Image 1 (cartoon, rainbow, N blue to C red):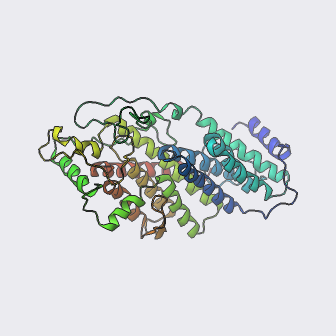
Image 2 (spheres, helix red, strand yellow):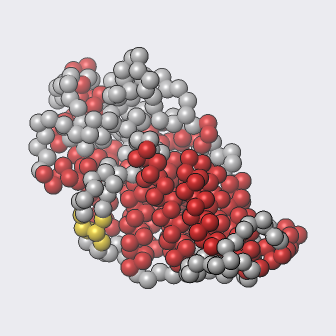
Image 3 (cartoon, rainbow, N blue to C red):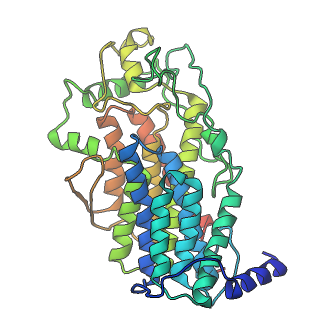
Length: 434
């Protein structure tokens, strides 16, 4: 930011009347850490509520983009008040602003702009935040600063390609080519032919140089024995009927079907709070995690639509025509969960997101060996415990075989890609110092 723009912002935040009516009887004032945690929850709770009202909700790659924008704007607003880490897009410097209101205003402005379906929820949370602090030049400064950092983020992502990613898809005709999967393969139905965001790999990355930077090597050839082994594994372990899964493996399959950005955010929150992180540390953890997950999804979908590899449900049903004598068809085969995500198999974006999260959190927390207990929105009432981040990421990846969504090769390649993305983001975004 040049000097004249910074001077204009400082004038605005210290003297402007923003037209905001503040309750004379203010509620108990929130700490800055409470504000960061609250807006982290506001964002994720809005996703859960939206999915409940309009299933299946926001696709996880779009969800990660929303979180990355909101949480990074919060991070930048805090660091404009007291510099601790490098900013992402907002280089303001306003030391007298209210940190809790800067956090609230930044998150509110971003979330309202990019997720208008939940605007009423965001407005209510913001009004509550404003009412918790008496009106003053400090509170006005915090609100103006947060809005400024939010606008910088929105401007940065205004033409990133996300609005142009959903286009028609024409499947190939060769063995291994992606085909529409149930229920998107039923002619005459509203969902026929739907494939999720074929151009998502062309969306501008947050931190990566390009979405192809860590593109996975090719999947197995359908004629290979390795491919046959993968087909035969998921055919049994991931089947809706006749599977050899244990009861615990069935639990794992459904437990980790939850959105990765949502689940790994919950893990980060649990661990960061347990470690006693302050507001600046919390904001950085949430921002770096979601920057990495958003870029991991970009990398994965770039790989997916580069190779356009078919899903297990297609491969197993059409095994009689794949040219591989080690596979046999089952025309009625269905995965454990009936709706396979409508995007190509290779690689597993879910596994990539888990790998990115593991890499980020283990590096930011200084160790992989952190024990925690996790819940899931896709298997309510069940908790699972882990001794390390690696154990959780391993189970996250395995779940995609057990639920019948992915071949093992896709899971393994996604994990490697995600780990690379996560390490890159930690090394290139929001480091200590300015």
